[in-house]
Image 1: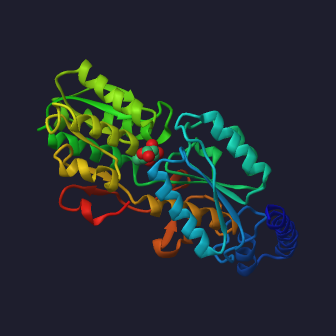
Image 2: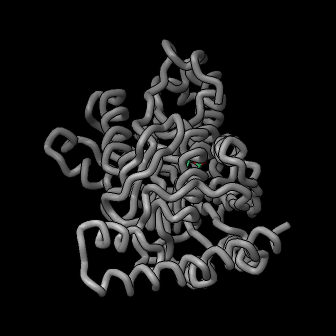
Image 3: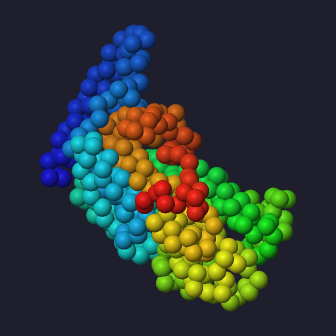
Amino acid sequence: MFGTTTGSRRLTLALATVTALALGATACGGTTKDDAAEESGSAAAGKADPQAETKKGLTVAFLPKQVNNPYFTTADKGGEKALRDLGSEYKEVGTSSGTDTAGQVSYVNTLTQQQVDAMAVSAQDPGALCTALKQAMRNGVSVVTYDSDTNKDCRQVFVSPASAEDLGRTQVELLAEQIGGKGEIAILSAAQTATNQNTWIDVMKEELKKPAHKDIKLVKVAYGDDDAQKSFQQTQGLLQEYPDLKGIISPTTVGIKAAAQYLSGSKYKGKVKLTGLGTPNDMRAYVKNGTVEQFELWEPAKLGALAARTAVALESGQITGKEGETFAAGDLGTMTIGADGVISPGEPTVFDEANVDEYDF
Ligand code: RAM
């Protein structure tokens, strides 16, 4: 299956190169406006051709940060559906630990050997996957990161859940309001190397420097590694170490759920505030029992769908990952690649008692 798809793909690429070289030769004979336009659309020049037909029969592999994490199950199902709609194939591989970076590297290498057409990767670490991902790209595999990025030269496009600035700032704002603008707070993160969480935490620290938050003190960043038990214990540890703690931000669906579980069974329920990024299905019970007032998240299925559609657009030559390129992303509309090859499917939603029942993910 892989052999057939990829074999015909290599042939197509070779033909495209020959055609493009021929086009180049024509253009040299006297460039007209039309020739120039044709030239800029040529695959050999590494330029995007927005008019290129969407390829079918591609195999796109998803490599989430962690399989068996409901957030990624929903995201990747969104990718699977988009690929089915586009006439391409989906597969998913990955580690069950959110800190098994070596495992992620070996999955990238295996996918490259299997000659998948494209891969969508949520990276546990910004740099650790780079050698393997660059090797994949040299072998003609299109590489998209989604959810959690690598260094930007190790992928073509990063499908970001939402603006990192917005996510970092709004989580601080949500907690600041709940604790009345003052007191000690902590962050319960995922893996210490996680690119996405670290990006948001940097923004949170900047936000906390603003005069409006001068009475809030960040006392600790703890790491639960997207492991439910470890996140639970870390929450317990935070409360022991900082008995005056007023609130916790947990920018991870695994962390916020475990923290809510701990708080709801403790004397701190409703007193120590908790917000961050969670799924409505995980958090509903804790909103209803008064442990959590508000939290936020984007739609994971949309993120996965956009990652899939971006991978297919890259493979089809409609985009190359450069700023300003556009492509049609089904019901997500027309997407424009932003600075550093980043695109995003939209804004997150804030959930509370009033709306949490309206969502099912
Ligand atoms: C966890 C993972 C993921 C993150 C979400 C919010 O499931 O750490 O990378 O985006 O939380």
